Image (cartoon, rainbow, N blue to C red; front, side, top):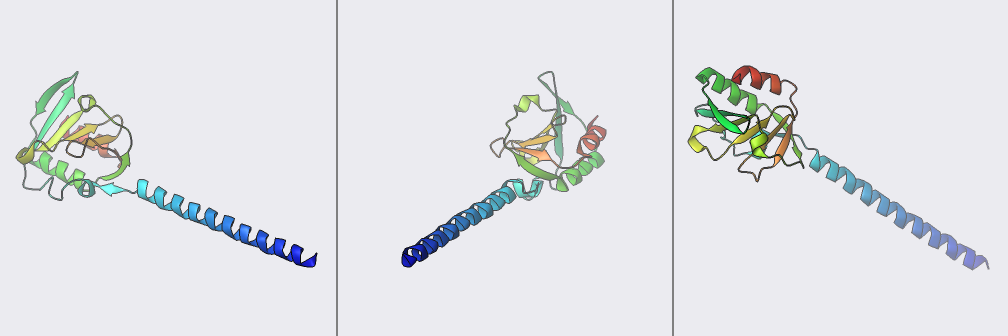
Length: 151
């Protein structure tokens, strides 16, 4: 009788260790997934490194009522835009945004197919050559700065 009680105690201890191990593995996996999906990125992490080079001219267009309107901006403002995008912090979003609902399209004139669509109200940018993935902008000043530079 005493041997059976001892064997049950060992069995319960093994079960507790197993359950504890599973819980620990799930906890570590959850932390790793959270860190992976909430990672703060920069524009350079998402796009090729010289996407907005300091020497490149930038094309800016405003989208209003479904119409695309070109905007002429000075070289100084273009340089300010490049600096703004260099320092921008982003977090990947799962949401999809129709590009014609964007407020602005910004692209280097040297490679116009690489557009950035800016959604001011949503605080989102979408990169066209990256399968339209959207990113939440982490800068609180971004919307105001874009409006100052482009309006």
